[in-house]
Amino acid sequence: MNVKVIGAGLAGSEAAWQLASRGIDVTLYEMKPRKMTPAHHSPYFAELVCSNSLRGDRLENAVGLLKEELRRCGSLIMACADATRVEAGGCLAVDREGFARLVTEKIRNHPRITVVEQELTEVPEGPVIIATGPLTSDALSQAIGRYFGETGYLHFFDAAAPLVTADSIDMEKAWWQSRYDRGTPDYINCALDAQQYRAFMEALTTAQEAEVHGFEDKNVFEGCMPVEVMARRGYDTLRFGPLKPVGLTDPATGKEPYAVVQLRQDNAAKSVFNLVGFQTHLKFGEQKRVFSMIPALAGAEFVRYGVMHQNTFLQSPRLLDRYYADRRNPLVAFAGQMTGVEGYVESTASGLLAAVAMAAKVTGKALPDFPKATAIGALALYISDENVENFQPMNVNFSIIQGLDVRIRKKAEKNLAIANRALGIIDELVATGI
Image 1: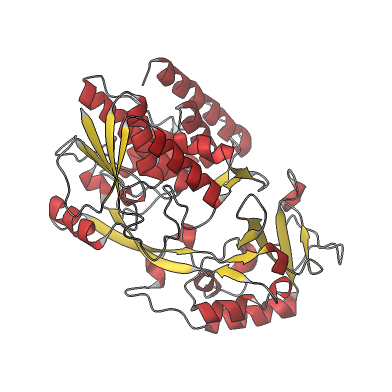
Image 2: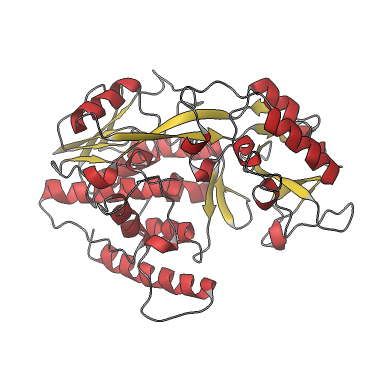
């Protein structure tokens, strides 16, 4: 039996690996490098087109729980992320290129995975997992629309942050520190005083935006809100968001700054840093002008400017079941952000579950039961819940995971108890040979 996987992003790479690890031959179709989208910059699989951070890594954080569940399920993406980790305080961030290169090597060297560099323009017959991501090509997007009857898609806009070189940052006006001094000092902090912040806000809210067909503020996903869109919501919005100064002390004054821009390393060599929370769709020249108003970045060299792109996702509650499969045809499944899960780790989880379920289907085994008490199961149940109104992309969070039967007042303790229960369930599932 051969299963086709379409797309070698995070979800597709994970799906191909999980299927092959279960002794199933996989044909993995990927249109790169023959055809690239404006958001892609490398020929490697599992390219991280936005941030290089996979977010929090503590179990009290829902995405930290999801990562640990994936690790225990033998996730390729998590293994490669852990192997290419760079310092980022309490977050799991990776060397962007090193991570993608390692995933690519693992996939290409697996004896049961055949990679075909080709763009598919029709939905193939099953068994197939379609994981072409939010940047699905126009031809395949239209084909999926036809497959579901032209009513299956919604869309929102996503944005990526700029990258600057480390040696162009003025460290006389910046300092190393992690918020609240948690862990090691892994972030470069660039302070602005009240006057500098006021001038920056004026420039940011009046800067010229790039033309993006169909763009409106209301169509932007909250988790990837362009910084200029946030700024338009109010003068202090950024000071309570990506520029919040709490937990930081400017060594030049010994006090908490008025506002702070944080930079996080983007590669293992610490030669490139990204502006945390500075997703944008300003014109490139405007990005250079406005972001150079940050004192420590006055002479910054931008190696990549922020970009904006339209992400497309399915109206999954109507179309997909808890295994990310077409309700009408269980041998045609989808995975990744196109299903409405939002985020790198969430996309990986959807690819893993879709593949584990597909493996069971083609080998005649019982379908795995990832319950709502697990992060993996809760995500799948969210995107397939027919009672969800106004379906929107969702990051994993404790509100969608089944609560406890006992009351625990402290949030961190409650979340940790939920996490420990979830990991116990995952361990039992793994022991049964899912």
